[in-house]
Image (cartoon, rainbow, N blue to C red; front, side, top):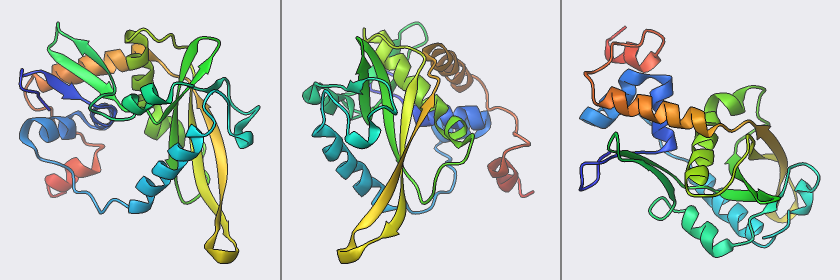
Length: 222
C-alpha cells in the first residue's frame, strides 16, 4: 500500500473495495486482513493475452466486428500502450497534498478526434446482465479516465467494456465467442473524489462494521 517514501498507493480495485465496504478496505490495507478468495481461473489471463495480441493487429483502426458499434479507433502507438498496460509503467495520478497516488493499467484505449477513451476487455461465461457493468466496473473506468486526463490526454464522459463470452464449440476444438461492447459514462471527477475519501479513511481509525457487508458479518460470526 505504501512505497519507500511512505506514499499511499491505490489501484482501481482498491477503490472498488472501498466503495463496497470501507471497513474491509481499511482492514485490507492497514492490517493486511484480506477477504477470503478462491483460485483465479487461468483462462481469464489467457484470454486477456490473446485478445490484446489480436487488437494490436488493428492499431489505428478497429476489428471488423466492432466497426460502427463503438466510437473512435484503437490508439495507434502500440509501444506507448504497452507501457500503459503494465502497472509498473502505467499512468498514475499523484496528489502530494495527501501523500498518495493512484495508478491504472489499461487494457486498451480508443482515440476519437484527439480524445482518449478507455477500453477494457472482460471474459465471462454468459452475456452481461443489465446493470452489471456499472456495478462492477464503473470505478475502474472512472479511474482510467482520471489518470489519462491528469497526464495530458483529453477525455470525455465515455468508456467501453468489450465482453467476450462463449457461444458454441466447433470442430477441431475451436470455441466461438460472442462479443458485446457496452458503453458507460466515465467521470474523472468521481474517481478523484473517491480516491480522496479512501485516503482519508486510511488515515483514520477503523470504520464501523458495515451491516450490509457479508464479509463483515462473517468476521463477526453472524
